[in-house]
Image 1 (spheres, rainbow over the protein chains, first blue to last red):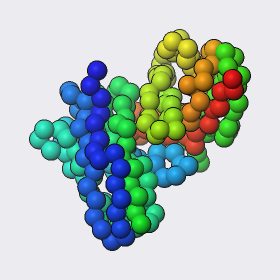
Image 2: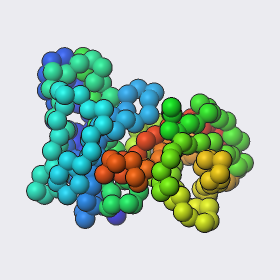
Image 3: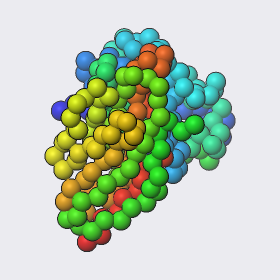
Length: 111
Length: 118
């Protein structure tokens, strides 16, 4: 069965640089979510999109932005990176009301 | 206040034994869903089991079952016949339907690290 695809798997950036993470949801899933998981932490909700429109916003810094495109893939853009942004970033997708299915995550390291 | 509480930071279980991972939750929404996810050391987040607040029976998925006690607001995960591959971090999560969020996003607990001993 198709799963949520995230790229890249690993990313190393320096402070103040920008990063773009990509997510391809499971086909026919109408909602995409982004989560951030710091080392030893639980995942924290960042933002979500329903049918390509932003539907909810969590603890996403103003330096971060995201969008969902016409082909349903989503991108998380992160600017002015800080050391504290080093984390595992998950994308998840679902059909409304069904369990979220997560991708394998992008591990971002900021040096 | 914590919406999801997992009181066991770490647990050990002997191979082939059963183990219960605790989860309590706090919500005023009448309609909500409870989920368990497994996160191995490799990092991926794997969906295990789901329980809806109106479900009359406890959810089961293979060796996983969810002991849902609505009045006590608990949703414990039971893993039967533990295997070495069950060693991982386990997260309990909740989705509140009427939170006003509109996207049914999940709130996670802090997790329980399960170690299966040969």
